[in-house]
Length: 208
Length: 169
Image (cartoon, each protein chain N blue to C red):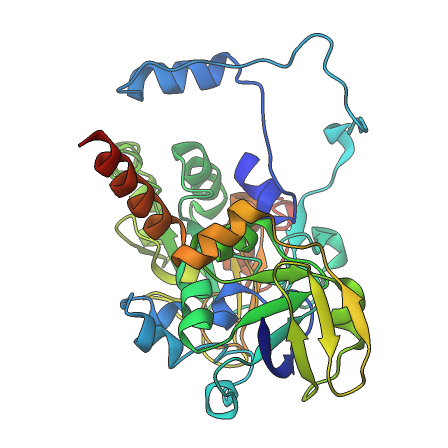
């Protein structure tokens, strides 16, 4: 989220580290680290409180990550490709969500669905938990952890006129290939359901 | 002083348009320059002359933190960029790579493509030689001007540490 604040146009995105962050960092950090908190008397130019409970799943539309719409407002966006994973949404939790939706389902005809675990560790965990099998049986392809199609690098580069839904971080003009291709961004639940239906849909459309 | 022809672009010009990722297997400035702005204007590099100036809209340079973007623009011979606003991610990169940029909404909106433009980095004064109109951008602070003079952050730091070791001899 801290990273995505910048993608959405902010100068910076800062969080006060919580116990989950501490747990994550303590197992990985090779150097001594310090966690900072705000000064108790810190002044803010503005404070905006957002209740996230009522927010519908959002999709970022071409060509800016900040250009978001609730998934229910997007109708008839037919897709050529769905990318689930990458550095942005490639955690084991993300793959579990996608697998739960894709289990026993088939990827829509003519749609390319590419799964990219965020790291070798996540890849192994997904293998152990049987998630990779679910993806392959559903007709998706599973890639080694890589930037791959996210920046139009390789495997899944979009042609002119193609549309993709990705759980990656950016959807600027030409990001995943041809400047005339379009990229939508979502979380793994919407992406997995959309891969099954061949167009952008809410996860309920598949889980019902 | 920078002087050149203005080339205008719209809002949200992103780093993939400035230098498409398909060329990132090279970090050679001359090679990156050959594809500068290619996905925003495929003929850009054929049209420009050394010293020309890019005029951007809002949020110029959004996208990747890749330093290839300012490198490509600088190596293409563009003397500076004037924009309504810059994406932060590009703003720092530009100075670190030694590419001068000016935040000036009035100039960016009013200067027309093809205008002859003159910019003083010391005062931030932007002048359209075509219309005679003048605009004021914030001048580049001395420290940032030194980065540009040195050719970017790396060269600046190298020069500083060399100076230091000279003194310590």
